[in-house]
Length: 175
Image 1 (tube, one colour):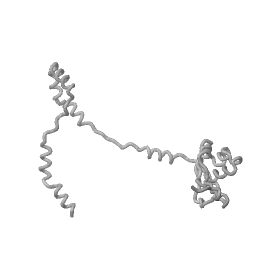
Image 2: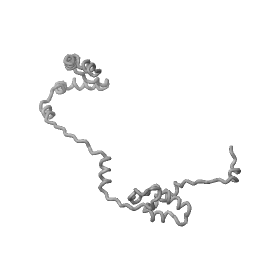
Image 3: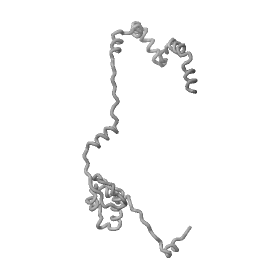
Image 4: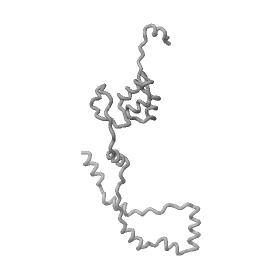
């Protein structure tokens, strides 16, 4: 019901309002900077034919302007281009190591990547047996890059649970 009222108000006296807007005086040119107005007056006084040339409309140029036809198309976004490139490249995959924690539904992992379970496993193996699970062995086993494995071993550690015996609890002083 409110839409009918609003539409009626919006369309009231529309023709007269449009005619009033059309018949208004067109906006004038923006004011020139005071420093350039002196230069313009000087040039017009030296060359009076310039004033007539400025006001004259060139029919030839106007006809060229009427013949111009612009046809534009939106450029393809970079996201679509990247998506198309990734879909076309064949990737190498490897099978995941082990099937713990219900990760059976994972069919394959791209080379150079590891799953969360594999990351935790290799971090834990490196922590428990650092002489056997070196960075080189992890690179070979999981088909990763050496710099990535070195960063992984340097900056990530697995969660460690420490259970204190009653004697150790007495040694820890509360604040």
